[in-house]
Image (cartoon, rainbow, N blue to C red; front, side):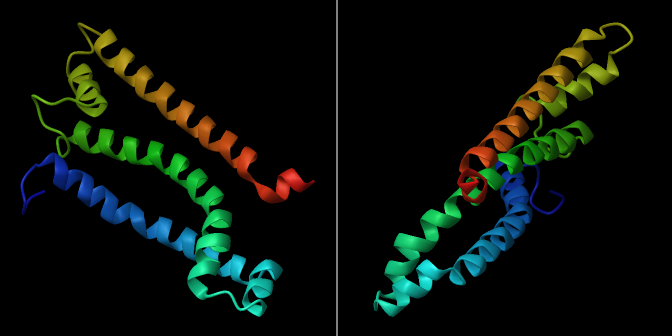
Length: 148
């Protein structure tokens, strides 16, 4: 932010540059675990090309955990952006975010407490809802749990 200025696109690129590392590790772990499965060994013994194995076997089986991790990552990214905006390092006026609204509410909370309460509640409810969505998707897409 100091070098490139306060640009919205650069903020999202910086957050994405930090968050993709964990996603890449999760995806690599999923693919490594799936490579040990019998259906992959059967596909290799049938003479399928590596591209076909990846496209028809590895990607569909790894997609569930990746979707679940993505839905659980979105709230943390939203909270990170709100925190940076609260500190004045994120989105700048005239654009707005929940972090800016909460920052403004914190400045005026003695006279107008609802300016702090309502954005804080909206952010909290949204983060909880997205976490519950991620938990529900994890339960729905878990292959091992649905087989039990």
